[in-house]
Image (cartoon, rainbow, N blue to C red; front, side, top):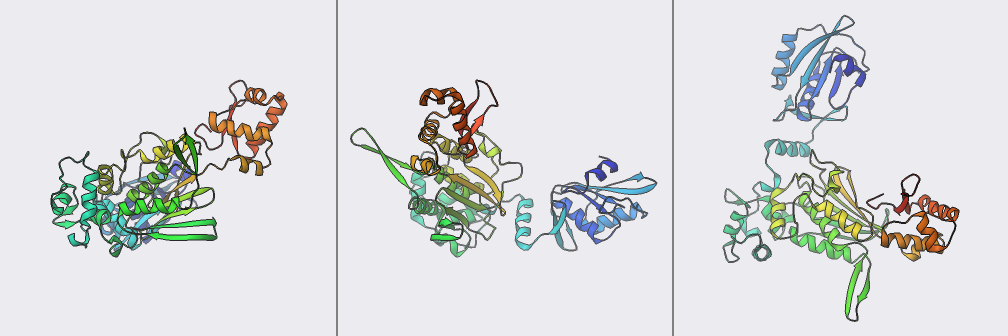
Length: 447
């Protein structure tokens, strides 16, 4: 890309304009190296006006090398008779500092990294994961019964580990010892009181009437296996369940949300959260949805759209923890958890879960089936519209002709009442015109 193209594009995460050589140039080059790389145009104002740079290029290269320890590509291009210097910096495999401080790009801004962020940055650059680091806790801080219970759970996937082996041998085979010390993963998975060492390793659950009114609040501690079970119990205490009888004696529970989808969301949060972040996992239960947030955004290279695919790349922030959950039979395959949530919700007639990146973390939003007959009546729907929504919940879709035949109405009436359901945000119309046009629940996979 030449200078003219860069000037038209303007400043961004990977491009910056500087009128003259000063400290801000070195800070920006450090930020480029520590983020995704970038191009700095020297001799250009913030507004894109070309002033030119008259300095010596060899001196410039030596100065960059002295201040940053890098050797970027330096080229010159003339614009209207003025020299513009193009400094191109690739992403660096090691952290790059300027005068002992580290910078990164956020949009078109260069910002200094704080201590917590810097710790995560160095860990990422080292290629070592936090869960594999040795913990300051000791073997005595682990609960032996939890370890042996895990071995019993994992016997099908770990036939080479014997329940009667000594604890140290079991941990070693699981990769939970580092130079004779237990790892962070070992403490979180099997610790008696992991929160003595990592206070952030907890789940906070609240039942909300509205965003400002908390009905109940609970903090869940203990090892990760305990947190899964206790979080499930807490949520189940605040959501509805009804019963259907299959035959004379068999009763089937139907919960507001598929329990397996809830469990998957909780496990996903525990496995993928950033444990270097001081925040807890947060679960908020409202009348018609559940909000599950964990600190730590998606890994680079994975998009929100990828999460709804049956197969997508799996990049694990805590691979040792994930491996142990797999051995225990609590997850099937890496990279399938979010798709499983989607599938379970759709199979139970619920909208797809929403996945978002929010407040430096990852959010799962599960909505329950609010389209009961009582609720639909409160929306002012007539009997035909209510029956049509219930029909779509069961069959998946309805067309204009079906509506006419089911309820004995004319085409204009069917069109008007179906359009009303679309305007109320209950149904979504698929197709513009013609015989293929039909209506599905808004939020369903097809919509």
